[in-house]
Amino acid sequence: MESIVLGLDRRRDFASSPPALRKLYGAMCRMLYRATHDRSYRHSDRLWHHFKIERDVQGAIRTLTFRGTPIPLENGKKIVPHAGGRVHLIATGPSVASIDYQRLPMASVLGVNGAIALIDRYPVKFDYYCMIDTNFVKKRPDLIEKILRQNFILFITPQILWYVLQRFPVSALRCKIYMMEDVCEPTFMPGRGHAELPQVSSADVVQFDAAATLGYSFDLRRGFFDCKTVAFTALQVLTWLGYKDICIHGMDLSNTLSVPRFYETRESMQPSSIESDFAAYIEPAFRKALPLLRERGVSLTNLSLGSALDASIIPKVDWTSLCEPQADLPADLPQADLPPAG
Image (cartoon, rainbow, N blue to C red; front, side, top):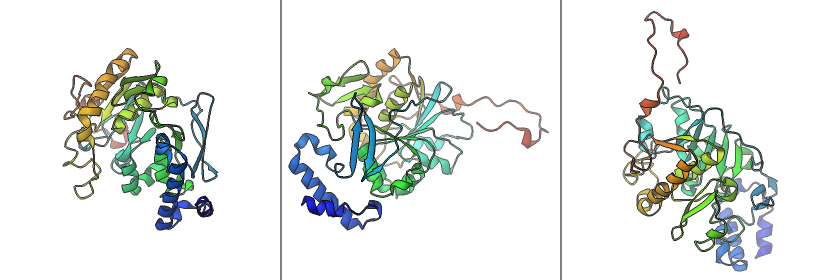
């Protein structure tokens, strides 16, 4: 079987291969990997024959190649946050549609999943982006294409990059890439259950629920905790970058089965497990992370007034309270002399 897989591997432009051939190729690769590795390696069974990863002495990802082609990474480089203390984390709940981004000043912005759709409506400039949702990559290639051609740092896992490269060639990766990993599933290494997580725990990687493998990482090089919502992962990215004042948009976390995300219609809605995961994972993850954040001087603000996350965890404010007051201008002032919006 391995000789058949190696023969298929000669096809370099994998994204343009016939879907049936890619599916057959992937099935054989997974079968071979599972036959030669125990179950603790199962999370890497799609990746092993596409990716090669090198790690530094601390075990963090240093380089990555896809089918022999090096993927330029930001890993190992000094990433300096933009000037200014406040950063905006834009999620995709329907409440985003109620915000007038022409009026809201935003010096630094991180988006997740479909937040990129805002650029079709407003002059929003994203500095960072975060994706960990395989269903989003598979179902919204139109938005993935927008993301890939932006000039920002995309924080992504090898698993998600694999799904991206099934649909787009390496040449489509115009954004900068930072390769991150789930602390429970390091690539090509055994998975870590609740019994193994204490081995990686430290002041910067805090496990606070063994059974549910919940925790918080202040050091992205050592991994992040996936607590069932990309907003929680993005929060770990931002605190690792050094931001102390974080405003979260669109973190509604309610009615996800009946109300579309801000960029969707009822006809184009994709499934969501937010409501089923909320009580067991999402709410306790935020509740237990907040004391850690406060200890480090990090403050959070939730701009979703109807968020299922209680205000006792993250204070809620109306987005208009963050807008700069409008100066009283003479009625006859020429339009060209008005200050730029935002």
